[in-house]
Length: 93
Image 1 (tube, rainbow, N blue to C red):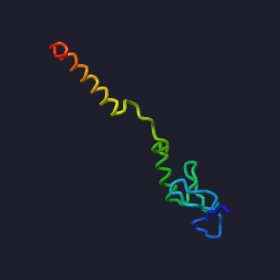
Image 2 (cartoon, one colour):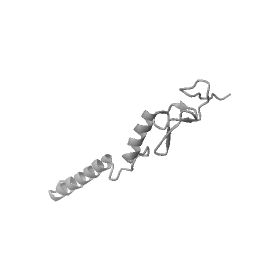
Image 3 (cartoon, rainbow, N blue to C red):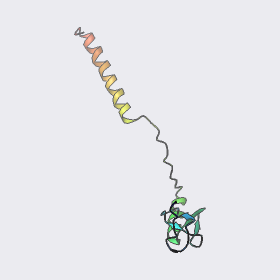
Image 4 (tube, helix red, strand yellow):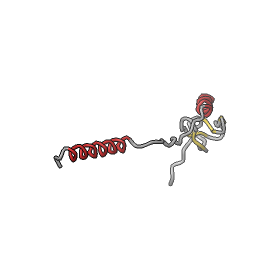
């Protein structure tokens, strides 16, 4: 049988959702709405509103640019090519 989460504030009531801010299990009596999210308290609701006002999202933004290892590899290739050209001009190869 699956475990049923109980409300953190009301041990005799089943939880219907988890707080968007802290993750606590809460029943329908405890739900406080904030910026379209359901929270467990005014404190969590305030924190979530601040997060939302900053444009908060849980999805990380994609990084643009070349990975540092690829930059290093490209640098080594250029250095090796330059060394080859110099050695070729000096008649060592």
